[in-house]
Image 1 (spheres, helix red, strand yellow):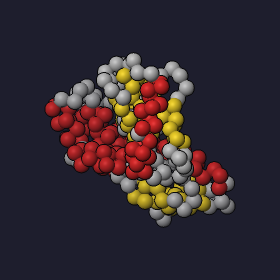
Image 2 (cartoon, rainbow, N blue to C red):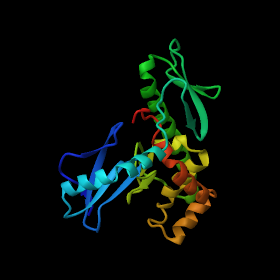
Image 3 (cartoon, helix red, strand yellow):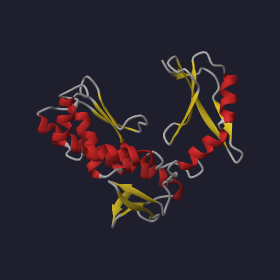
Image 4 (cartoon, rainbow, N blue to C red):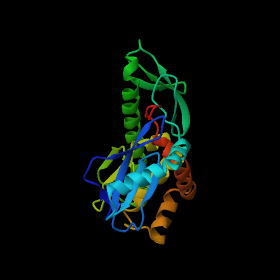
Length: 240
């Protein structure tokens, strides 16, 4: 079973910067390997008996490869005035309105934010999470009614490994970042998790339920594979 090494994390010197490296041991791994993605960053997977000295040598020998993969990742998209952020897949510029007293609101295709400039990122994030909660909860109620089922508690989190989940008790959890994706993608993820209220598996019967709730299911899965990593960079600093 893979797990974090109970020791200080490693780092890799790329010349112009030093990047942190998450180290995982895996009994199933036969050789050392590296993964690089927008969600987990640089992850080094070690066989269970490999030493940290071996890990450091392997990292150093793959520095160029890691740098190239990092350069291909989606760019960070900080939540600052002037930045454009998708809401249901439609670009919305962030407009700072310091004299207003309305908090955060959408007007004329823009996300308007009152208050201090240094609070813009935090306030926009809170607004997007609330917006996601409302949209997802409303969509879940409508789709669950079509199944004749009642979902349990619905929670909104900033999950990194999955877009949604359904517990054996029928409780649902979703990533708030779905509010950044097109509406039909959000609908698909909600439909996917609700389908588990009928089929707690990924059998053909399960996918038939999903298709009945979300005709765009296949297209939505493809969209998430291509663009999902970019959603996780929204709100990150450009220097990350």
